[in-house]
Image (cartoon, rainbow, N blue to C red; front, side, top):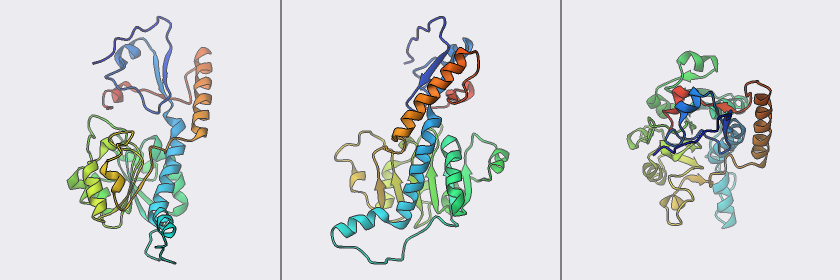
Amino acid sequence: MKWKWAFPPNLKAIIEVGGQHPSPKILDYETCFQRKIRVLSCAPAFAPMVAEMGLGLAISAARDITQADRDIRVGMEKWQFMYVSTLYDQLIGIIGYGNLARTLKPLLDPFHCKIQAYDPWLPKSYLKKQGVASVSLETLLETSKFIFVLAIPSAENKALLSRDLLLKIQKDSILILLSRAHLIDFDALIEFTNENRFKAAIDVYPIEPLPKDHPVRRAKNVILTPHLAGSALQARRNIGRMVTDDIEAMLLGLPPMNLQTAQLELMHRFN
């Protein structure tokens, strides 16, 4: 049920600092737009941190860094083991080409990767200008060596990566789940990594904090981190700077330049 907001008559902006615009189930966006109240998100402050984490997880999974660490601690290491992957010259698939993806792409450029993306909210011409090929979700899953799940959760993409679609991922590929578990059949993901169909790096979960007995804690062929991608001190400092700069701009009668402004056409599609 949507909350009953009592907007002060001189309210100019609503600013969130968690990284995602409030759900339309909570915030009355129609009233905000009618009264020209800006709804702003600090999501751009988190994008560089999440992109950096995504790159790190991809490299770690490809080179088996975390597994090598675990093995050597118990005396089961494989010296100069050669059957690992690399990011260099690989085909990268990105699901959702928003803030996170646009920040990740420059980090991938030194590896000479070819990048393809699936984003039904963006025209092919836009992706082409970004140097990214627009492909169907099926093609992306069937052909990509690294798959980054970066889409914002919406009413349309609940369990977008279904069991049947996850079966299309090629063996030895790596799926990096960074945005929300909302987008994936999480039980199927665990089942398929346990069967060694592909690897995964997971930072977000269906339930957080994760229950002690959750099956993902025993999953094989996965790297698990507890929603750490955006948790960098620098991101928090950047949020403070962005908020104060944009408040100062609005007090001077200027538009905000740092925070992400809500778009009415999109807010009703968000979960």
